[in-house]
View 1: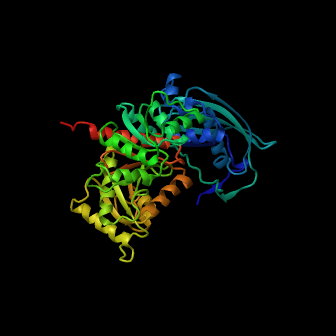
View 2: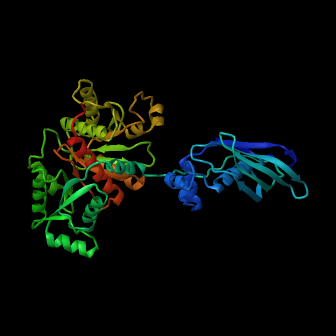
View 3: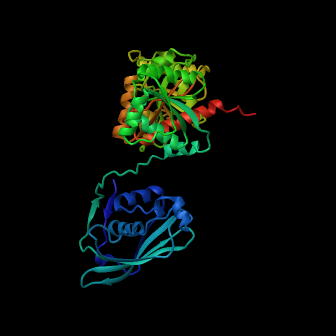
Length: 462
């Protein structure tokens, strides 16, 4: 609980001072842009700021003015202050990462109307003057002490993780992808977009007349894209799998047919390996501090212990390819203690022991963990859970498909997360997209498939 107390006009003397120190972060700039509608790229994009002659993204001038307002309203004079006027001069830019000293000093007092003028100053960590100015307020005349009012919880939500995935693919070759039955706008458009981004060389597998009709209906340009003409979705699934098994394509991608239809063709083919096939959501959750992998929420309905071993190892291997050297795996259940009546807690304990004995490698496992313990340090602390996984999980291994699907959709539709998806355990990555996915997540799924394919086809280091 934070208490605010003001200083009345008669208590304030010439030369009185108040100030704050703050390191300028991108979330400061983003939040101000959202509230003020100031989307000047000089503030939001480092490359644009560099072209404009700055060494980094810059703070909006009125963000500095807002900090002065905060000092006046909360410190000196404090609650009850009424702004009467403000003049500011900006001498150089405040750059992202600068530590700023923002202060006000009483300049003059006017007893007839209880107004006070303040000199305003902002310096950076090098002592350079960023801003000067004069603020004028009507100071309170009655003493006020109160608990700081609740202004609501505000967070800045960004989706940088998927942009970084796409940037990684800039240096990779373009891989051929067999797209099974791209016969709606969504699946055909992602093929075109992935080709335009240099991610994929699409092979469109489906009824040619239907593909051409969809392209014409929605104004999609598929000129130059190879079409494998087959009569229906079943044939499209079989032919797409044939293209991959023969090596004509290195990636398999679902179009507008049902997932079961495509996966049925996969499991009947030589794409199967000794591993259980499983699905991973790669989630960019704005309220979580890093990329989160959720598995399995799309393929295995009620996996048993050995199924979960493969599901876990598939996700760990993906994490390695994505650059997470030692991923932390939280094996989820409803509780964090082992209870024989809850099978998922027994599976969690067994998986952890399997990891101890080398049956699962390349990660740190802990479980059972309830979801709050897996993603919240504070929850784990309150429950006295000592674990390097708790509060910092990279991978969430869910008990079954229902739990995983609910979790992934809750993160997507209630926490504004982006969810790319990939199927693992086959000889090639399989991209599953949904009509509900936005363009960013569809391209991210393609990027992940490209990164996996490149890793599988690159020679081992000497």
